[in-house]
Image (cartoon, rainbow, N blue to C red; front, top):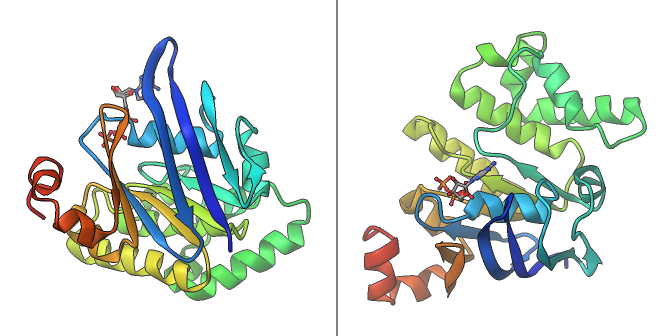
Length: 237
Ligand SMILES: Nc1ncnc2c1ncn2[C@@H]1O[C@H](COP(=O)(O)OP(=O)(O)OP(=O)(O)O)[C@@H](O)[C@H]1O
């Protein structure tokens, strides 16, 4: 079973330390959520694990293989992909061009095309929009495009940074259902979410971060049993 392990991660920007030694474990086929107040370092932690930001100290590994300070493309080759906040679609590129970007670590262009076609079968609206500029898709469609693009490299683990942010209530539900569907394929999900009410019921395990430190680790029922944590961090969800 694929396990993502992060140990004592310290990182930040310039000389400003933001994440002060956070450890976590996430399993394949499960949803692990990170909650916490705005600006507490959730995105920064995901970026360090995914290789998008240097780790100052600490380590991350996937199934025992180190990811620490590998460049992003090597982390992707190891099977871990980050979907950044806002999805990170390239608005001037077409839907197909965006999807091909998801296969940039693969040497075989035909393999990329066949994987994209398989994904388009699962996200049928993309078939009608192949040559549409991604920037002209609706917010919900862009979210689906980002998710599909994330899957082109067939990751074993996906890091999602607020995948439901800015979406309509119906799209929040569809996005979270799709994410749950990925776990049925054995993909591990590590997800930062502000939408606690919708995300908590899906989580197998959750972490609460505050001011760059881990404040809580447990199952959703553990957190519901902790009145103090519920009141301070969960908005009574
Ligand atoms: N590129 C950057 N350069 C400098 N500081 C940054 C940068 N990105 C984020 N920060 C700062 O790091 C801190 C943590 O930001 P981060 O985005 O990790 O928080 P977050 O918990 O994900 O917040 P939110 O829930 O609002 O997205 C904030 O004070 C933020 O201003």
